[in-house]
Length: 352
Image (cartoon, rainbow, N blue to C red):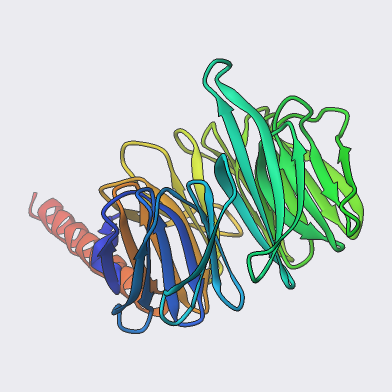
């Protein structure tokens, strides 16, 4: 299988200057945030920069509704979508983490890290209206690694000491739940139908319509989850991918990203080769392999556009139809070369 480099098949490549920490595709814009506090928007059709802004970094999380809302360092910011103009900023204390827009409100979390104990010791959950007014502040001990909405409740997947997940209802009553074999939550995703939380013991928790189900996989921390109406696919820190379509693949080290594009599964993992693998979703077989010179940390996909970012600060946009056309062109060239090599081999054998 012949490799193709990522930059060869990208429609455009941009440089943030430091590691990309957040990546969002929204309408005709690609928005990314960096470790040093830069947030930039590009037009996905032509790659032109629409705007950029610099704040105290790192950019922790981004969510978009009527404005671009994002957390960075110890602050929550709101900016105009089309111009990038900052409209307001509020101090949220500690180290900002997650952000979630809920109708006319903004939920954010901020955590305190104690160097003496080398762990997070307190989290503040804050709710603001869209004019920056603080509505509610709730304190709890654990750091959340995921925040989403389920049946009008806010859900937070948390780490030690309690593990499991917290529910916050419309009256701001906080309730803690956990399963019998629960362990710290490592990550989570929000689909159209449910929330899925990955745990450090290889378990998946699904929260749907007030019901909670669990699935146990290998005893390694869950690092990525892919879920749609057809199947569930998980990746873990051991480099294993397991699909509900009855296949399993083993790579080296942590699976960083899993995303479904055009009937295929794209994945990246934490190894020295920095490859992107494109797998057949039904069999798990590798269809294509793409090289890159740095670890790919984030992949987003919407309406035929694929956005990727790496540890060095590069942000790349790919167009689905262009990517597969170029990959197939390479595949055809390789097949033609293989046929020619086989023909030469047969001719040499006849001469003998």
